[in-house]
Length: 430
Ligand SMILES: [Zn+2]
Image (cartoon, rainbow, N blue to C red; front, top):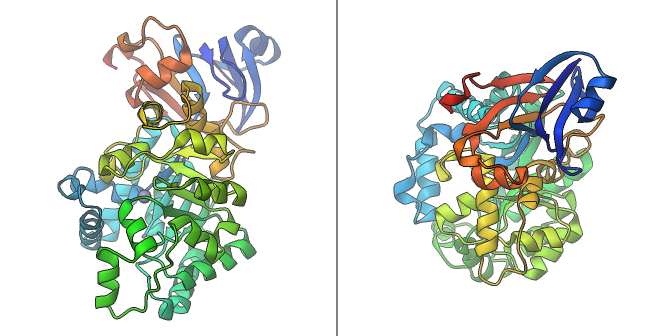
């Protein structure tokens, strides 16, 4: 039995507890309350974090750990999304499997140090991300990504290859890490392949994630048949049919929304698209920093929340962020939502903290296990110090976390009752 106590416990499912404590037995939370009440009920090793907040570990719903070695390497082309995609693929194709695995482990370690306990990670080389999550001790869903596969004519063969790869990886899943699939996007995956993946995922209850409605280039291709990709498909002699619909309407027409995928980005969505997403029970990985770094625009966060959609936060890859820091991501999510022209209403610090924790858990179908500090849930926990100069005086712990803190203030990260990161006891160095 372990007891963690601190100035604040933020269960997220209920208001902050002053002088709070959490009791942990093995991998589970068995008590949450004031220090007094928890210590009177439980006996065990006590860790007193003092002026700090104990909260659910952060859920990073959208990452690409395997490209961590490309941090900063693509900044010169990010004004032009297609050039960015091409350069990323070009560099990645020159990396060896050990390079990619080492990058994924560094990315996972960066996450652990930032209080991330769960990743929704997409891998073209799925085994790299899977091994990284396992070796660092993180929880997550590793989504095996499709290859570039826009041709309906090769969809059956593309699907068989993907399925075999997925099945061999699924055998290597653990209690903490499960396997999913990621059809990359409406502009790189054929309609037929989307249909085949949708049938497979629905029959086998497989989690899916898809990049969707990320950029105006994607809209230009799907709505009007314009831009780089249609020219490429013509040069490849592909019979690529322009759906003349929004990316979300296109996904809906393939049947893939029935598998309730996690949709990443959703920047260029219409109100009808939001209704389709909400109605299908699909969820959203909101990636405000990556969207802004590309200049893609503002995803309408408050509309997603008000439509009842499960919304988590995603750092995206460090090739387009350039860090994995869910506190900074939540701050940016709040600031961007408040500053968006035509916004419906004001987004609060509490709402973005929820997105960084229970929202992400819901978006990944893990809300029964993680996302809040509640009795019976897994002990996935982050401890964030609250006594740095930038955080004082401390008025509201939720506001201090969202508006005054970052990954460097994370002091301890725990997954399933096991510490996977412990900061220096000398807080003066922070
Ligand atoms: Zn992405």
